[in-house]
Image (cartoon, rainbow, N blue to C red; front, side, top):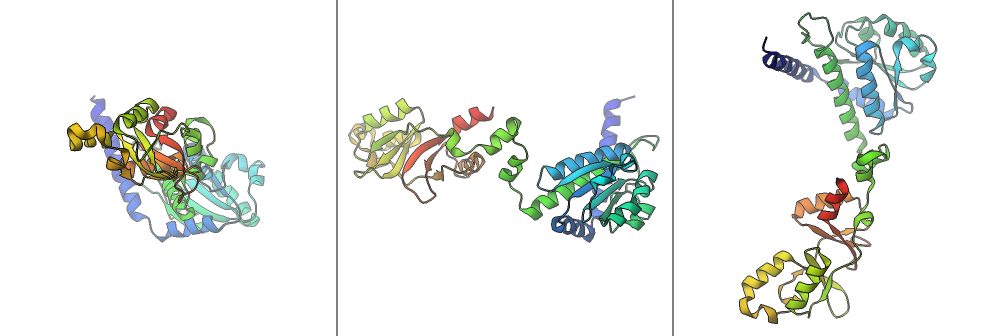
Length: 320
């Protein structure tokens, strides 16, 4: 058997089914998003077996993106763990068939506690769906399993529906990278997202006067190894920058007279700046937009006093 072709068939089948699931999404997604956004309680994801594993992932994704969420195994819930659920919580029950006895057995207690019930199921006519306040239909016509028995396409559909819900809530909350970092303080990801400009900037700032001659500008740019220098006027105010590119263009423009020119003759007036308290992720975005390798660091957005230089090279070294 050609297992390459077989694997590709599985991908094609699941993708086709997932597209169909996505096309069926309607106003129920808006309802669930608003229900969770406005709840004063938490979200409890419950399931069992392989859909329970999917539920655990959905709960983790919600918790890491600003929604208080926990996973509750439906079987354990029958034996005391229902105490996790409190009045005002939103319970999302996962069951492809919608008839898992463990889940059906906890519906009555969930409602008695005073929780909203959302069914994420593959059968919108199931007992679970009939008891739910809102139904997210993740039903598929065919499993990728050749026997039609092992959960394959159905669990993928449930996972994707959960991802869609997570992303919608991220948008609803206006959740940003710095918020995400608060929930991921450990490891390389948290380290990058929590890092501010002040943590990586260089304070040995290259600087010349607007009257500085060409040869001294070359020396300053070379000695500080940043490929640029700031330019100050007679009152020590930063008025521009000179980069390697400016130097090359000056050589071409002034030719033999280049050694006689001063910084004022070929500097780039003004400069891109970023506040010292800004996130490094914001600095990277700014560098990408303006296609620059260095940013002047200032105390506040409208300040002209340069207190540091943030270099792309240092950011890349830090991100390794």
